[in-house]
Image 1 (cartoon, one colour):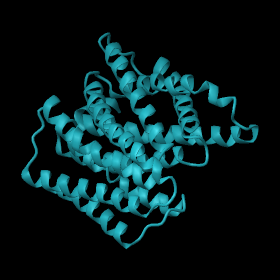
Image 2 (cartoon, helix red, strand yellow):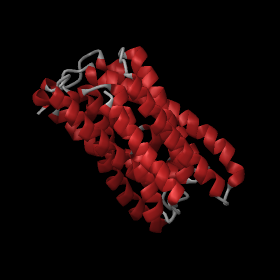
Image 3 (cartoon, helix red, strand yellow):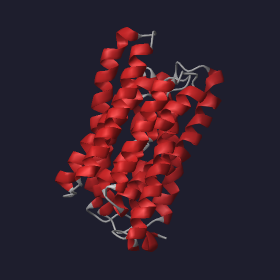
Length: 299
């Protein structure tokens, strides 16, 4: 399968597959964010997810996929640092702000930074229509955050630091998206990068949150671990899909399409978390979808 995927790089079929992978990543990433924003401490939710996907990935990394080339160890070290910083910022964001406010800010700043970074790192060039589509998408995402912000009543005093953390998290979304795209292109077998990435990435948060586990009620342990295993498989298909998409096609286009996750996040917030979605929000979600379509069609 690795050989088949590599053969699609830079082809029309590869671009179509990258489109499908990016949209799948969008839905699953919204679900992944909601799993961390449930009734459990976001730090512990993330720790359970990371521990689960690290343990599950271990036998595949050690015994199934080809071992990494020597130069990949430095790349894995860089990915570990960037993703660790991202997860700390994300947890600090989710503990301070309403999901439907902070999530759009993270996802709205992320694609803008990623497109700019992809132009510098990979030399990607975008048509004027694609820049317009990006502007429409980002406007819709940030508009959704602003609308939700004006209508929340709980913890408003915590929203300023929450928004600051959300913006910083968006910058790290761009950093890890660009860096991971470079990393997955640096190895002959993309599944080598994915298996080792998940195994190594599953270490940091469980280690730094070990003290929080002592405050966890016994009745919450099993539900939290179930959430962790579910989140692990969501992460495989979410992060794995977007990494593969960035190997097959343009990094910036894949990043923009993934940010339609904001639409799915709003629907999850409404249907699952009990947060309201009105006409203005639906209109802004349509704007987000329109921007993504414009970005893809203009390319």
